[in-house]
Amino acid sequence: MKFYVYQHIREDKNEIFYIGIGTKSKQDLKCNTYSRAYSKHIDNNIWLKVVAKTDWKFEILFESNNRREVEQMEITLISKYGRKCDKSGCLANLTLGGESNLGYKHTEEAIKKISEKAKRKRGYSNINYTPELKEKLSNIQKEIANRPDKIEYRRELAKGNSYRSISASLEDLETGNKWSANSIKELSKICPIAYPTLIRMKKQDPRCKLYNKYKLTINE
Image 1: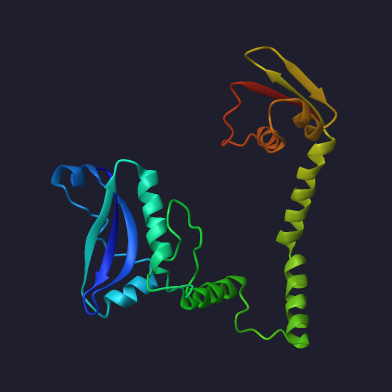
Image 2 (image 1 turned 135 degrees about the vertical axis):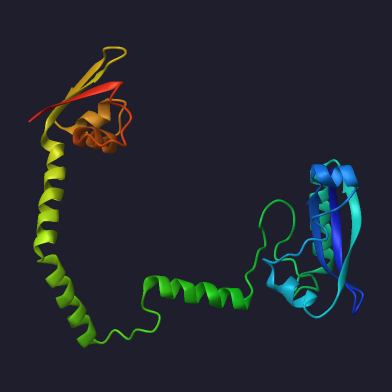
């Protein structure tokens, strides 16, 4: 049998605390082992807290070559015993079972970590934005915007936007088909090449691999 349902039992209370399913690898099939059943669930904090307190063992409950049967058995057993994460039972499972993550619920510790990480990413976890600080940051942004390199950058950016008003044509070197338009933007709407790629061709960007298939002509 290729698929199986297993349960983890905590030895201090002789109670079931996890239900799972596994798929036998080639090595498992050869040696008749169940590697998934005795592996540690290091991504499950509830499971880790249980095994930190007591020894545990596993038991194989059901085996089948039909994965749907195995998944349904897992769902049924999880529903029977309930889960700790939603205070419905004793299991460390974070989902309702089966293929999907249906019913997944973060622990309070995980929610706190996610929230703190999001705040750090936004860069203001411990910052109090007073009016004085806001004004200071605004002045810094203005100073940066008026730097010569930033002014030159905006000029170059404006040149890039001017490509929209340059008439252009594209030729398929294999079929001989041609497309023409009053701007590169309009050309992208009628030819098989997207606008960003046409801009790369205009700039002769080495990342573009279409030079041997298409010829872009710009009428400046």
